[in-house]
Amino acid sequence: MDNMYFSSDAALPTGHGLFRVQAVRDESGIEHAIVFKGAINDSEDLPVRVHSECLTGEVFGSQRCDCDQQLGAALDFFEDEGNGLLIYLRQEGRGIGFFNKIEAYCLQDKGLDTIEANQELGLSADSRCYQLAVKILGELGVRSVQLLTNNPLKIEALREGGVQINSRVPIQCAPNSHNSAYLQTKKLKMAHML
Picture 1 (spheres, rainbow, N blue to C red):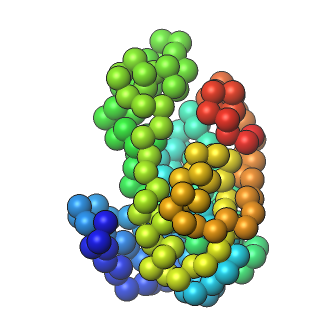
Picture 2: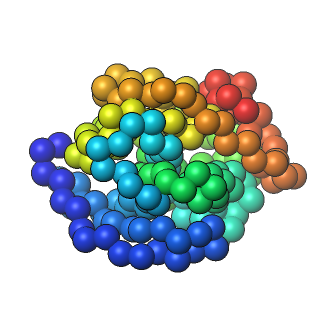
C-alpha cells in the first residue's frame, strides 16, 4: 500500500456541525474519505472513528443496522470535543460488497442471522481490512488515538498495525424493532461491546 493520494480539503457543513472533508485514493483507485474537525496533523490522543461504508443505512435510512446512528454519534462527539477524525472506508457490508450484502439480507429475511447469512454465501462474517486506516493515521502523523468503536477486532487490527490506542470511546445506539436481533448477534457472536 505504497501509493495513496490525498485531495485538497474543503468545508463540509452538516447537521452535526461544520467539518472539513478530504478524499483519499488508495493504490487500487478506490476513493475513501476523511472528515475532520480541528487540528489533526501530528496530534496525540485524537478522537478517531474508523467507519465502513453502509449504503443501505446511510443513504436509504435502513433500520436493519446501526451504521448511520454510529456515524452521526461520532460526528456529534467530534463537534462536542472540538476535534476529531472520521476515516470512512469504502468496504460495504463488512467488506463483502453491496451485491453480497443484499444477498445476505435475503437470507436474513428467511431467518438466518447476519453471520449465518454470510457463511451460507461462503463469506467471512467480517472481511474488513484496516490497513488503509493505519496508513492514513501514519501519513497524518497521528501519534495516539481515542478510538470510537464497539468492535474488538477493529481495536486489535489497528494495534497490530502500530496505532497507539489510549482509550476506547463506546458508541451506544438505541435498538429498534428491525435491528435488535442484529445487535444481539454482534454482541453474542462477534463480541461487540454493546
